[in-house]
Length: 326
Image (cartoon, rainbow, N blue to C red):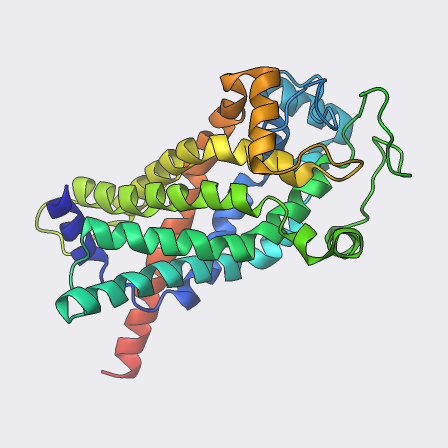
């Protein structure tokens, strides 16, 4: 395995200036995944009577979820809460890819004295962990706002609970800025980072299952003798990496989504562990697989488009740099 990763690293070792390239690449992936993202968050929050909002009540499965969202909210329901992620995902993607690449180069410099040296499995794993930790600081507020906007109109039928003044099922937030401002006013800065522990437990293994499979699949499907993978190889490898990553992430993604949606009308969970325990006690282990199919389905085209855009952007910028400074 380490030999394959080193070979993959040699084909990708020139990713030393990823910050500009990440920005144009990720919106392609986000746009293709937006309808799936809306239904994913709802199926990650299923119909369950014993917990706080009964969000997603009556959906049952992914297909029924899609039909219900369309009937109740039309096509706009599939894109609810996406403006904030679309506005910020370029920065988020650039930072994550930049941290991963530069950490990898730093480790190569530290171990081999050459930042362009082929990374080992350990180097890629450490770089993925660092990228996952950094991503939480940027991504938690964005995902919080997205989920609050997507879940705020869901029905609430739990009896004998004292709710906030806002009637359940009616919109609480007028938009992403109003949502963020309201959260800060009511919960402070800590409220903006609600679910950050669950997101950390999701993203650290998730990015390990993202970058490493991408490098491996790129190497496996690239023809022998090729200096770099072709666009088709990049597309397939990126798609497989996205599907694998989301399969690994889904259990903690369920917990994160529930924690972040918690608080629109009341607070049910005391923390990550409490959310996991309540979810398990009420619905069993199967609850942690909710949204798995949608996650993997959206993960393939989204990541395929993102990686392809990333690699092509890097090639274009390097070609431009070569022509400018021959």
